[in-house]
Length: 380
Image: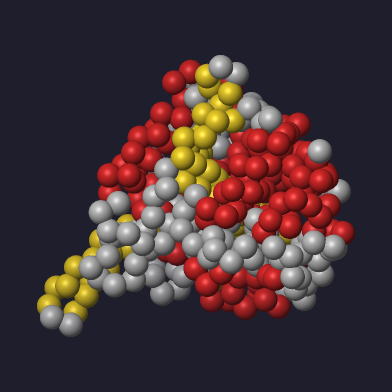
């Protein structure tokens, strides 16, 4: 069964979305924090949610979510946009998806492919977060009952600043063979993500926040991030009893694979968050089991926590839909549909714990369809 700590972690992170940018009390619910124009779209008793299945395995795992929601009659209707990062000329459809997100305030998405070559478009995943100022990424890496991995009792949350740093997209060739890439760091956004991390810790009964940085080398950029987190910890959260410490990012990588139990809540700039979330996912079972969510002041976007397209198994009915399904339950909690969220999440964790139906990434031979059916058998 889903444990109280798992349920608390998921529920708490969702209710933290709109907090602290306006310095409001952390104990109030999201509905009391936002005005009417910021509430998710709801018509005829159903919430309208933007769905972007994404590339690779995206459509397969999104279909699992849709099948489960339909079977349980979850009051959600989808506005689906099959945006793909692999096709040229998809800008118009991407813009339509963005307009849908602006209307609905809530989205569920898979991962969109980003081409590596210089002639390709910039990341649409990043564009969504920057355009809508969806500034906080939350990924909880927690050991799953019934699925042993190298390390036991792993339980930490990664809070990643989503909108600046190396992902600012500001690069140019100043001279043939010489490229300059700008890493943008601002005090305002460092303050905002630091507050988000501490509010997450308060709501989820966490005891420590660790700032991950490289300020020993990038003394101005990462120095600003580290010093801002320190100041927020001391001046605004010193009375809470939550411990604050910091760790250089390369040491963090080593500590994660040797003694991950030492971490609780981790807050970090954009690029480090991307790397650390991949390490964290590997510690607890891989990208197929780790859900994620992204929050801004007005919008919330839910997606697998480890951002992999899965092109190598696309169309093979081999993908693990757990991360996408669990991300959708976080979305349901965000919409206030707690009972449906708890039923679906509990079913996913029960199927994993029993170990009878497991996809290839979890050392099994079951298909995506098999796993989805097993979850449905639990909830029906």
